[in-house]
Image (cartoon, rainbow over all chains, first blue to last red; front, top):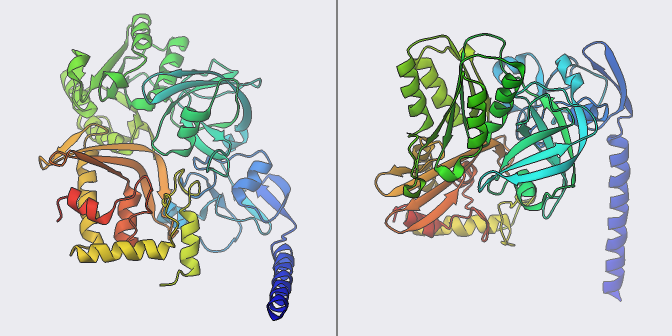
Length: 365
Length: 152
């Protein structure tokens, strides 16, 4: 009997405490309506309490974020003009000294608790959400899929830019997750985008795409984002990419073809062995149609059965050899790949007279 | 030893789907403190330290990075392939550390065995003495990895 009474008393105390916590949470975390001012001119009345990233998304203003607000990509920076308190420990790793002094903050970490004024680039107002249907899924290699997402709305983007793909919860993954992927289709295609998605071991989004995504599935996309695009000059172009880094370069090259841009362009594409190469026929076709375009695939570890007679070695060594033969002429570099590859390419291009401010890249970082 | 509430929060962050798809715990249902303590004891018995193991893992990764995804032979003993992906992984201890998303595959030419790890594995071993839970994809059993790395 005494045990029963003790259990009832403890249960009663727990229930009262839970009720107090619930009421306190509702009172303390209820920030009511707050005023959000963007670029000094646009004002929104929003409900306080959510992160700035989420609050802006609620007003259809989409800040670039590759991790979907988990504080792990550092992309969602905005300039905050109001005093919103000190920089949080979770923001610190992503902010340079200059950014801290200018009150740049990570919008996924900052909570909107009172009236707030921010500054964002005007082009972010053009970013929209697209509800797409998966039209086609095609295996390009053993670990890269080409997926075409169709939608009714029109998208306007520059070749080289990217979208964020949002995948729903699945398996152990309890929340929607988004990741950034460059468009591989050209901007003239308005009612959809093509993405190249390489399977990353244990990657949440890439695993979904490779193991769960089917044709006719509905998927949301946000975009376009990014400042990786062809500059309007007449210098020679050096493109360098590896793996799914093919995507933005393919988009730029197809765009050049459609627009009749006749600049000399050399595209160095690095792969490990022949099974990692793709789009060889497409590149050959473009070479036929664009006499100033040259595609140079290179294998770093060609297998004996590959019977490879093309360029061999690390892509940096291949580029080095080519540029040495060409001599010093005015060029721009456009790179897409891992940070390690890009850093090494910048060194090689610099050796051949291409200054860093003429090298544009989409780093996987 | 008793698990603190702070470690309890860290253990939540380590579950599948929180920071990474598979998480850091595998099928291990023990408290985080017990996972760390057991591995700490083993490392001590072997006469090693977390730093020694982390240093060797990091050295192999740095050498492998030079291949941009292609195999690199290190010291004529190991073949290392480093694959980089876009983005970062925050440390589940949530103290602001970020590691690049990289998969390191090392094959021992002598033992004919392979291990896989990531920069966050190295950080977790060096800074937190955490070799991941049993059954985790990136678990590095202290004794096995010490043998593999030719440290014992």
